[in-house]
Image (cartoon, rainbow, N blue to C red; front, side):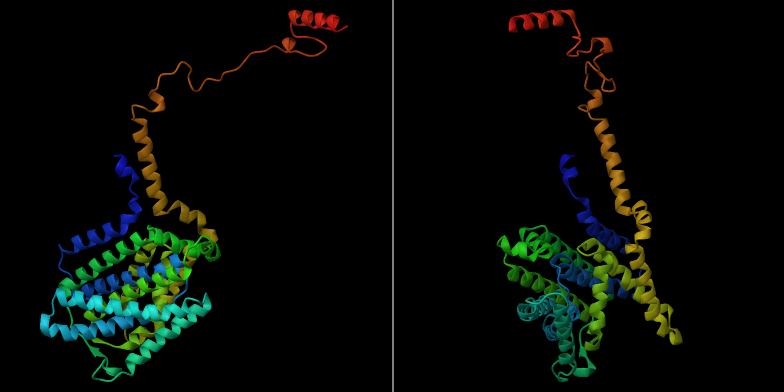
Length: 387
């Protein structure tokens, strides 16, 4: 029981939610449209979690995350189209393609991160935004034989019934990787850089090393998401990885809470479902209203999350507060039944009694009027002796 009480269950909420979701889905027949949405949710979770590591825990603003995803999608998709001819369109080919795409994206993250991470704030955001646009233009203007050019790259499509499960497994691995990094000494060094870079540097932390490490790891998982995205499509086009997509990933991180992996996961699922449902509902002439409704819903969510006037409402109906209240009540009930609780320890004096010393006003000692005759007699003898 003591070991269970020491476990921080909030670290395992995402694992439990995803596993329960997959178990429930295995008992139902799901349409192909919903399976595609599930694939996109898993990919969005990987993207939001990896960007949260840079923005939320490192404290650097990056707007080029879609560029790393684009590298993974094109290079991993190209590798997959080649290796599928030898290994077939199975799990080994997918895993190898994921590794190749992720490593290529990590190499690009190292190349762009080495000079860019010497910048801060808006300057870093502009550089990463420009990087994402450069990557998109390069693949768009590539030759038809290499990466398809403006027509896009043809990639193998994995099976609908199993790809969403594989994508969620990779999402679980991504969450586990970042949670372990954050709780390690390297993660503490990264958060120290976010809190105060000067103080972190003064304590001996290699700021450049850890910034680059965070950037490379984040780029790797963005590349993994890109490869999985290429497996969900029959054709990959670079126009899908513009700066708007980078901002959408950033919105997931900000909406879920800076430095909160669970919040980023929830926001990624919410925004993905919102986009897909709006695209389904608003068709034809109403399609132009999709971005308008999407922006209005985001504004309402942000106002609800940050408006000072709603602080009392949020605190009262906060799920974390409700869970903490229930766990505290359970701990109190458990402690009350404990044989060693204070209520069961026999004492001579009840704890609700007030101990006092009764003194009358006439017995109070003053220099002119001693409180007792013996005290007055001793005072007179002292005066005679002194005289």
